[in-house]
Image (cartoon, rainbow, N blue to C red):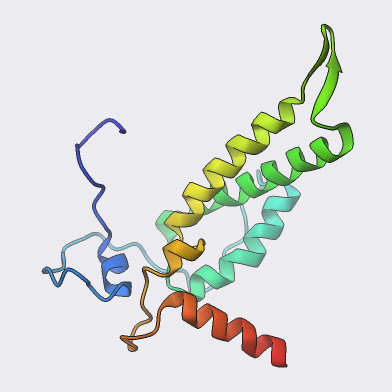
Length: 163
C-alpha cells in the first residue's frame, strides 16, 4: 500500500457522476475541478514517435468521454510514453529474441523486463482514464441511466464500421 492515508483511494466526483452515483451518497460539490480540454493540445516535445501517435489517437476519445483535463496532461503524456516504450521494447524482442549473447554467454534480453514494466504501468494508467474494458463498465453516460460507456463505444465502433 502506498504511503499516506490508509484504506481505499477516494473516487473523484466526476467519476461518481459518470457511474450514476451508485452509493447515492452526497457528492462533494467543493471538489477542485480542472478545466476539461475541448481540443487536444499539442503533445509535449519529449514524447517518442509512438507516444505522439498514441497521443493523437487516444486524446480525442478521452476528450469526448469528458475524461481529459488540464490537470491530467502529464499523466496522459506518461501513458502515451509507456505505449512508446512498450512498442520499442517489443520490436527489440522481435529483432533480437528472448535471449541475447552477453559477456557471460546467453542471457535474458533486458527488453523483456522493460516491456513487462511498461505494460504494467500502461495498464494502471489506462484504468485511470477508463481505457480498459473493466474500467469502462463502471461509467454511465450522462443522461442515459441504462447505457454504460463501454456500450456507447461498442455502438460507436459498429456505426463507423457500417460507413
